[in-house]
Image 1 (tube, helix red, strand yellow):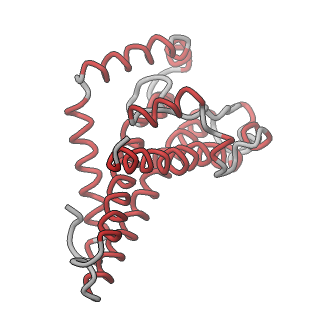
Image 2 (image 1 turned 135 degrees about the vertical axis):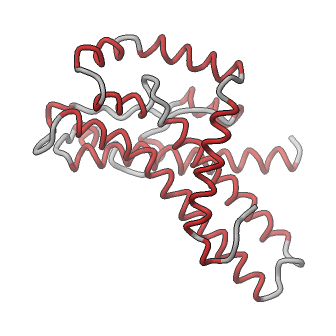
Length: 222
């Protein structure tokens, strides 16, 4: 494997050990806060990657850049002081929002590093700073990509849980019975490239939104 290949693999490993565990832990923590301790009792309310990573999904992430973690079990009947619909929506959006928060944190770190390095005149003399910049840029874009992808309203993605606010229970549960079929269709759409353009624009505008939130740290990243 070339040096560039090893560098790209390192970035994927970092994503695997941060973005996916943060996403799943956020689901578990929100469910626990709402009264359902199922995921917490199973050891899923943790940032430990070993508690969340799916073997096959992890392998795909390393070799293709696309993968998944083990889904967090949620027993909505255990929710307290919140309706089932509202509870499922809160649990669902917790994952994508955690990745957006992670993207924002990486963006602040990125801009802070280059702000300090630029002020000290180190940018033209340090390859390590640029290497770190590439890693942080990739972490930002991949976390945004994970958030945007999971908000698609297709079962079993998090966005499908938002349908609980729009659909009657009987229709929603009928759709959930066909999760595997929906997932197969989603894979086919990804493979065909049909979703590439809309996902690109969604990622781009979310990125620009986060970039604007950190404008006080000096301009944009790209």
